[in-house]
Amino acid sequence: MHDARPRPNPWLLLPIETKAREFHAKVLQAAVAAERGFDVVVGDQNAMVKNVARLPRGVYLDKSVSRTKTKHFRSLTAIGNRVVACCEEGLVYRDPDTYLHERVSNDSLALADRFFAWGEVQAADVLRKAPEAAAKLRVTGNPRFDILRPDLRPVFAPEVTALQRRFGRYLLVATNFSRYNHFLGYDSWIANLQKRGTIANDAELAFFRRWRDYLGVLFHGFASAIPVLSRAFPNHSIVVRPHPSENHDAWRRLTVGIANVTVAFEDSVVPWIAGADVVVHNSCTTGVEAYLLGRPVVAYRPATDTLLDSRLPHAVSNEAFNEDELVAQVRAGVADALPATEHAESEAARYIAGHNGRLAADRVIDGLVELGINPSLYRPSPGDRVLFRVEAAAARLAPISRRLRVDARADAYVRQKFPGIALAEVNDALDRFRRVTGRFSAIRASAMGARSCYRITSES
Image 1 (tube, rainbow, N blue to C red):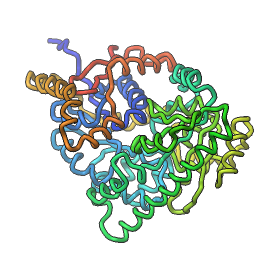
Image 2: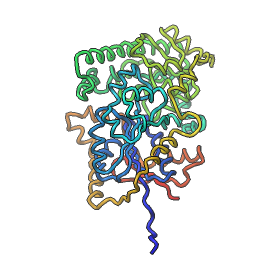
Image 3: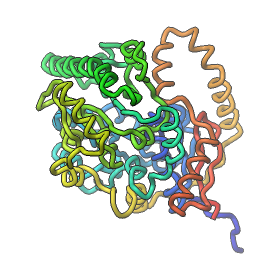
Image 4: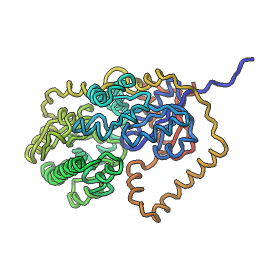
């Protein structure tokens, strides 16, 4: 007798840690996966980790292969999942050896079936530390940069228009000093590295302290430059956008009373870059994004260190080494007269795959299809449904409980990075990708039960 029951799809689990950075890219990745026959869970990383035993078994795409992931990957595979990974920090890093020490664990990488690299430079660095991983490494690019491509930029057109109406002509100053100006305090980055085992001796402690304090010099250099830009460009708004892990209040205090300066951290950085006359940064991914979006971009370098400065963001930017040079470079950018940066295109090509041709999101799914993920029926048990409801209720009560807990500061840090996702936001992102790409007409989103977690699937 013919079995009329639909054949289950393989599942893909896509956790999001930092909403402003990852949300649209993960929704795009989910839509591409659903189009290719996967059912997808996308949402809050913390909720997914907490509920992973109650979520469908499939392939879990993590954003890191650091040493802290080894135990997590073992737990995932022990209950029937397969693990693949990328490294969200694998495009812009300073000293390659420090990046490999801090971000790439041979043990974690050994537990992943695929590793998706940003480009040839990162792939070569990873293989230098883990040559045994060559068969599982794929140079795909990252879906975060798919949305910078000319064909996908209209996704953010409404936000660009709204920002330009709100601020008029504006300069975007992107800060990247969380290792010094961390949300949780001056010593928190070092303490966390010690807790994770990244710092194992006095020499390593001295190096990371040197790095933190160097970033402090840059932080104060930017703090001094902002009022200079304010005076030099009185008819522009100056928008300071801090890194997701920074103490944003520190920038608010430093800029209070400067009429045309606003500190803002809202939603994706992409429309903020696209709407700016000029973008100013130091060793920041924002500089690379500005270059790829075709915006004038200046790397302000009030101090330099050949070991601690990131190569790619400066290679694709015009550079300024003091406040006079900064004003001159920004003025040229405002006038659309910044010269082309020598070798920027060739440097970007070495670091970034997937910016032309097929989307990085499609290339990642190619790597998953190779694995032959087993389909899995997903029918949450009555007990699972109860637990999902309990967690949803706990999430609603969390603001009350946080006020009573001693780690409220840590909770506030988590909320800054991940303030939550509503189903309406997922549907809006899918609608935009449909209109812009002409794809995903059959892709739909629905709630999963776990906090800020949604199912993306195809109705075809």
